[in-house]
Image: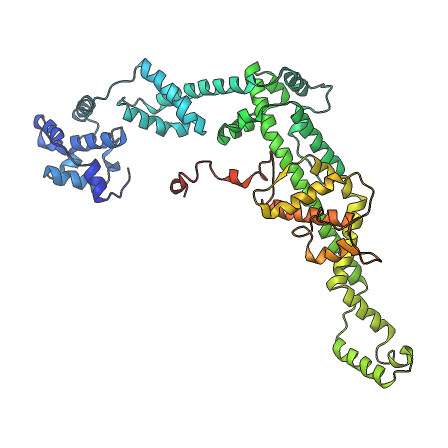
Length: 493
């Protein structure tokens, strides 16, 4: 029982009516307080208090003031005595509370299956809802164990109907593929154990394996729309159930349950595989940049020696050059700064600014062109990228451009409006991507452009500015909120 009550709540829920006070005429004054507490408690909670200590002081004092009796009578009332039990029976009769009938149980089952269970509530979570239903329908509350049995039976009925719906929409051809998938000595390349496995480390084999899984699930032609309307809590419970079973255990289920569970498995596994492919893509693009920077830094540090006092040294070189303009560099400059010092200055310059960026990009290009370019297009070809903001449209257009030219051997393309640049190419990569030929014409280095597009896509995916159709982690951000969020904003807050 809650302990804090304001004046409005006390007046609404704990005020005694004239009819209720009339019930006290047949009772001794020492039982007034105990009777009234049981009466008001049942009206509010739908059950009787189990012991006197659970009653809050504020409503207790409020009832005492109405009855104008001694507070000590509360402690003298025998809560489990015959008088208290007779009072409870009298209260039930006064309130019109009746015992549950077979018809009531049937109505409760229907109500649970249509109202409570579709929201993802478990048997234990549904208990409080059932208490409210019994209270509002003026039905006496049975014991908790008995009620849990009735709720569990109703949930089994709800789940059975759900399985029938799930299995109903599986095509016959897909049923044969599912059966083959569950066989230990399956002739198909994809089996249940493989479908449950993780992608593993980044490699071409990992990418191909995940794509093969995705192709197999897509070939089943299951109607995802039937499962997308089911509460995610229900789907998650069924997913955990199927993941904990072996192929042999799944085959032992009755046909309806087997195919229903497998349809849930394929529905959730498809999203997970798409997410894993996106994760592989994100890791590949990150690895390209990270490894390139490490290699360049390692190469520079190996023979890099920082030159202190460069400004003063350059001033001395400039003065000597002005003083002896006709002399050779070897005679004028080398006495001030030796050949090794000048070489170190050049290396230090390359280790920062545009020189460093160009070197990093060259390493990225080498790694991408020789290895990762075999993986990334295969991932992109199996993904459907979307965005809810037109500001991020250039990246999607750039992806489409890459797809259209994926079979081309051409290295350079003339810069035109059909090739998105703004919002795609980072400023520090612009000069390495948009090159100028001998005639002064700007052209796009195709490989470098692809790398820039992949880096932009990675950034957009990580903050969900671009999302992937069919994914879970990388799904439409509008689906992150409950569909009725705007209507019930206060409740969710």
